[in-house]
Length: 377
Image (cartoon, rainbow, N blue to C red):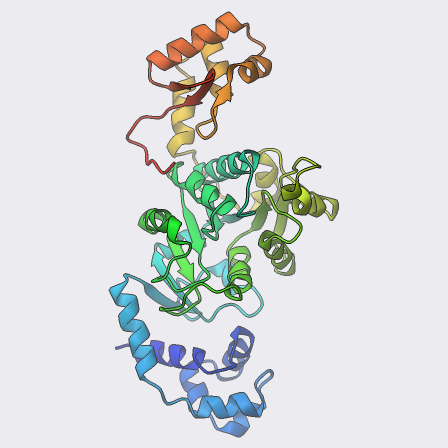
């Protein structure tokens, strides 16, 4: 069993020793093994340590817990990586007091790609849900990793938007990876782990608790070039993530919401404070463009492009204004396209017969995609 990894785990489990103190010790001693073998006087002189933590480090003799963590991670198909690991995400390593240890299920290398976090309220509107899904879908289709916290609400639709673009998404959890939270997103958790990554700094066996989530949020922003807040009330946890992003010198983006909606109080306040107003994905790309390599569109975005090239002029106008999340009423199609009702109905019938559009009750229409693409809605 890897002794070096055991030493990292042993040091991380010392009571009262958080990421800032861990980083300070690494700066002084360069490796956990040397920290564990240092004398109390040497340790207590290190910033943030003091006599109490120095004694706790010197009394750390438990080898069973690190071994248990390694075995539990193996059983759950989870990899444990440390700050010294070459696969540790470069963006995250740059923040103040980065997590010394990450538990990862899936492909950690997606976090070495340019990433944008999408966060918002657990209590959401259809406007917020659609916005999160669309932005994530567009970003992922351009090769950008979408990071979120797998909470119910906006986070869920951000992950799903990325997955349905056949793109990359990373979920940062406020629990151990053997206790994914919330329970209703267990299927989403499995989908994310299949092609993306689930990440936590919390040891195996850790259950979700309220005080874990602010720590989780600093990793969400730390992995990303910027944080997009979709919907946030007055005290939303998404506002904590945006504040952490500013402290980490990341961009903060916000989608404006209705002025009378309580779920838009936080986002509209961010805009007043200088966040970048986002109407389309191009507003995000223009801010982070210097970090991006040329990419090609993939997944559903490519399907849309390929399909629209084969459509007639009216069919193309109708199809482009439809969504694959929320059905669109025929009156909204008429308003957006400027076409007559007859022309719209003719185009919709043609698209429906070719299995590109489906009709819902109440003159509502939604895009359809070939069944070979990943489904998650």
